[in-house]
Image 1 (cartoon, one colour):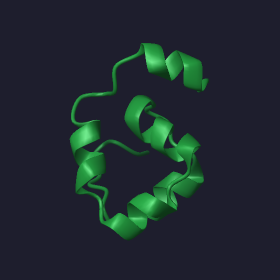
Image 2: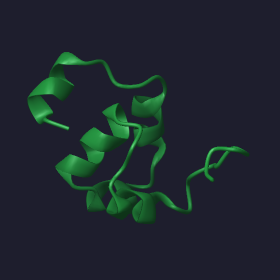
Image 3: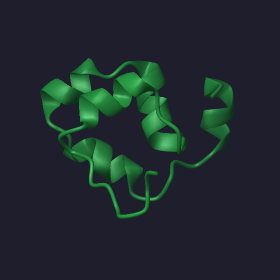
Length: 64
């Protein structure tokens, strides 16, 4: 998603708090694109999912 569009939108509920709770080494490894995707998007780049795989909780029925 375009970064200028992201600045006009509010982050998804709870995403800022979740970002703040990540360990420092994980947070430092995230790119600007991955942070924007984390805050604003439902679809994440594969690289972000891989970096956060140990911290994600998948609800039943979320993935097919």
